[in-house]
Image (cartoon, rainbow, N blue to C red; front, side, top):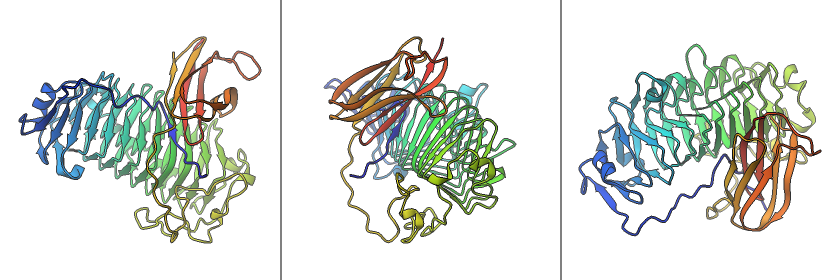
Length: 490
């Protein structure tokens, strides 16, 4: 059976609470004249449904447990347009499920006298749980961070959204910036032509942990004097896990697609990184004092060195192909720390290098990458070669493992790792160090469905106490995998 890789960070909280039977649907403008009036009248469990049209509103705040939805056939039909007069929506201290879906957010501007006011052009999410589905974010600007969305100490799920032309010209995350322990999970999204000083599309910093899956990051730009990471930037002990993702046509001074600095961890699994450009170093990716994990990925035809490595960096690269980059592929600095016997240097033979073309960035029949090495899978974001008949789509399944949490965190001397399983399956739960080394296996074997709690007391496999620092616990089932960052303080 083909396994599908899922990488989540703090995912699985309940998104369908049982509200009271008198929950209401508030139509705008039929029941309330404006979005602001509807939000003021709404309570937990209520749904606000906006009729198609353009709503020129800003500085809105959503109550706990409210669904805000566009009634049109697509997000383009129902638009919240701030007209450059402020941020559109604040989501703050929401401890229960809130849903935003089928809306376009445009022309918002976050500015003010501090980072809080200047961040999150369209939406600022702080200490909250929220799901954002099937929305479009276009032409929003944040004076500081998160041109479209700023995430602080929150765990949103963002699915099926488009981010186009958003900017954070003086900060990070042209589309999304996550920091201060935030753990957003991003599915099936398109990031196109967003711009920021670092992380043209997505920036994760200061202990953030982001997961991006089944998405495209195309034509994003890291601008200005810094120019770090045309698509993605990570630093300051943050983690970003990227799976089944295309990064193409992004540009930066440093790290055309990806830049990871300062003890960050970037996990690239089944990524296709092609036709990106760096003006200085790292056409595809730049690694400085960081420890990324790159598996079953392709770095090809980037303008610059495929992967630039400097400082005290210890990347782990396996089952991956680096080829055709203008300033070098497997450079001396890279081969000195990489096992070439489990990697490739071959023309991937793309059907088309246009990521939006039919079968774009799929592999041609006859590509050497379609016959992977032993223990490897076909590298890149797409397993199906061009011209092949797609397999019939199966009904989508909820992840078999959810509600993955660690508490307390930071901790001393013990933290409890909790998770819920929807069915009996084989599970491995293990703790790893910053360089990917195994610290301790907590469980390995079959577990029954239901809730589980495992404790880790800062002990390694040999029973020795480990030092203070950052660790990662990976909960891996038969079809999904979840990673959490742990901080041990002594």
